[in-house]
Amino acid sequence: MTEPKRDQVHEGALGERLNWLRAAVLGANDGIVSTAGLVVGVAGATDTRSALLTAGLAGLLAGSVSMAAGEYVSVSTQRDSERAALAHERRELRERPQAELEELAELLRRRGLSREVAHEAAVQLTERDALRAHARVELGIDPDALTNPWHAAWASFLAFTAGALLPLLAMVLPPADTRLAVTVVSVLAALALTGWSSARLGAAAPGRAILRTTAGGALAMGVTYAAGSALDVAGV
Image 1 (spheres, rainbow, N blue to C red):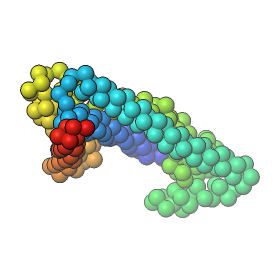
Image 2 (cartoon, rainbow, N blue to C red):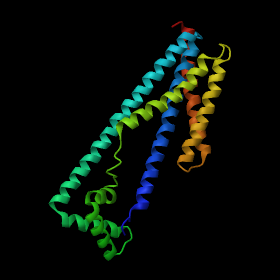
Image 3 (cartoon, rainbow, N blue to C red):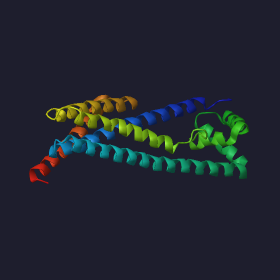
Image 4 (cartoon, rainbow, N blue to C red):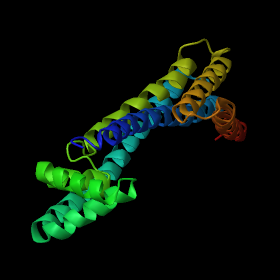
């Protein structure tokens, strides 16, 4: 009973890695769709390479910084909540240690251990590191692996930027008469890949995920291209 939560810790670490991978895939997907919609919309109004590059770069920078800032704020709030929960648990362990020991034993019993084994495990875990035991069993928090807002912000920034670069380069590098087709095909292929990746990470069938991502990207490009074309026709 010296390491009763080893499997849980390993599962938690795996879940954390999968969450980061999923966030990276979704961030790249957002970068692809938003930047593709922007540059295709501008392409509906003008075929000037400088205008397309300016619009694409502006969208890339605005989107990546916005994603990073939003992720930083969100994860900072989560980290503050985790720290507050740990501080509360530390105070309870100091003020009512016996009640906390009984609570830990009851939690272990609910997970399938007999009453006697659960009590013995709770005693051993408390003697080793009471706060760590309660954090993992009661709160589901690893005190040594609190969420890091800077890591989350950089991950979102890089994922969005990587995704946004594809439609931007596809739009500005090819000749004027092929750039729109190249962009549409490249974007749909990349979205199909992100849909497949997200489905695989979630152990789901990839067909629907691919359909959702490609349909959403196609709709975004179609709407913005129609809007850009309408503005061009109107002489705006």
